[in-house]
Image (tube, rainbow, N blue to C red; front, side, top):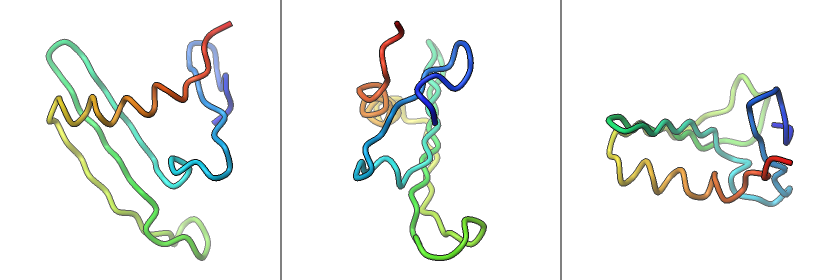
Length: 79
């Protein structure tokens, strides 16, 4: 994802060796709701449509916050 994909959305410029490049992460945290969907590439060979993933979905608030922290550390500050 680009550093600024669209107005109001912030991305990150991940290094080529950053382990997050193997993941697809979606984290939602609100005052009364928390959820995370984390998918990690399990097979890295072949076309994208044939890749396998290890996937977890959780509503455990502490775990969701722990999943969000490395994502937030990589965000590029707004100008």
